[in-house]
Image 1 (tube, helix red, strand yellow):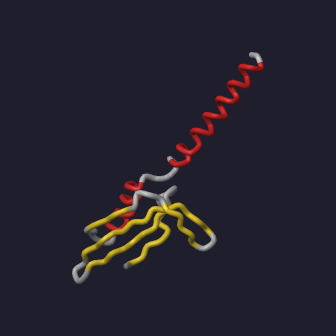
Image 2: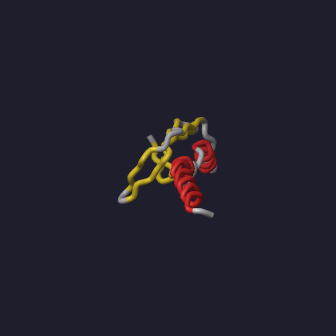
Image 3: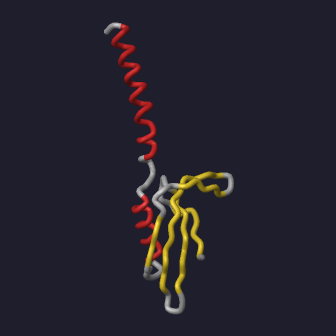
Length: 103
């Protein structure tokens, strides 16, 4: 192998790594539909739900000294006497719910 072939291979490898870095990093997030399904299954343990939604784009969320990339969404429950609307914030990388609150 001569120096010309070596440097051509090196430059090609560096260029490929640079081009693939962003698409590979973006694929580390959970699909929002899967996160919503997981959250709905947890809410269903305490009774039926009548509606749900999730934002498809990630957002930055600071909680204490930590900053997360998250999905925001909501769950609606029709109870016997009233309707409850919950919102949730879930980590986009793990799907773990970081916070829930009633509106």
